[in-house]
Length: 76
Image (cartoon, rainbow, N blue to C red; front, side, top):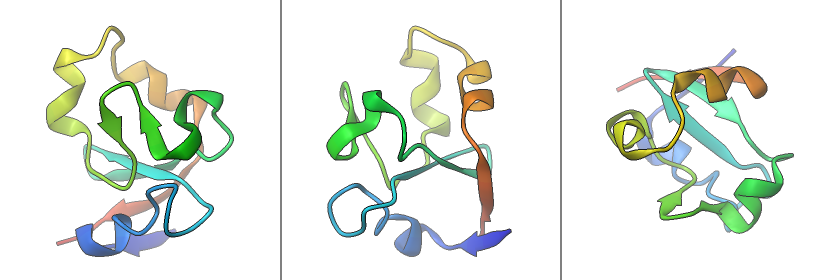
């Protein structure tokens, strides 16, 4: 599994690299294949970030991440 720091995760925002990653509770998920994350944005959420603090505002729970492969962990 990859280990990425926040500044490295930020490069996988759908703009700088073709892979699109998001983090949640220290895990990094590849959402590249999701039509909902095209161009690195999903509603008001941007890819390449840790979405842990933003999930309470979402209309779904953390089970949504089960749809995507976990490809790494977020390290500080």
